[in-house]
Image (cartoon, rainbow, N blue to C red; front, top):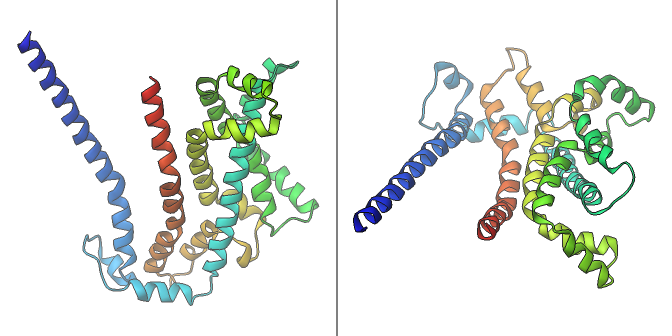
Length: 285
């Protein structure tokens, strides 16, 4: 009996050790490319042409000054990207959660058809509707405006699907009925009870939506023409597309490094809710 316990304890320790080793290796490969990015941001264009190195150089401030004093309005690009990504993330997760709550908590006609219809919309690529979208934006006089980049993100079938699946496992209908019996209104129930319970799912989807909007190049490139209205991905593409006399790879790496800081900050702010959700799920299990 004691031998079996010892063997079981050794097997648990061995599996734990293997898991730690795998996590360390995966973490290394995930973070290594960030290290390479920041190393390249410290090198000049000539040094980058010579090849790869792990040793940082001393041209970070020079690359940054050249970028800031260049022709591209990077501060406007940063501000535009923050506005679009933040508003998209907030509106998308809020209204997607509200849609999922309506389908989860209410009984109405055609309910069984709405869910598959929303999922069917997921099958339509953005490129298919791009021409009609651009024409609509042009007819409404919203070119060079951030509004067409924010409002369409409210309807996100992918975010709705994820939150709906999470809601089925974490939001009992008895809790909603208890709130109604206590006299709580529907909006109060949703905002005060449903949203706090959905924090882990909302945090995950807020990160994904923010990153997706932040990295979006296709749609902004179609409707934004003024440099001061453009987002960072478009400005990075313009910087990379410069002619060979003005091309500076050091500036490109500095701008890419500059553009990922808000994404890292958003992840650090919301990651605690993800960890809390995982811990809560393990306790319930």
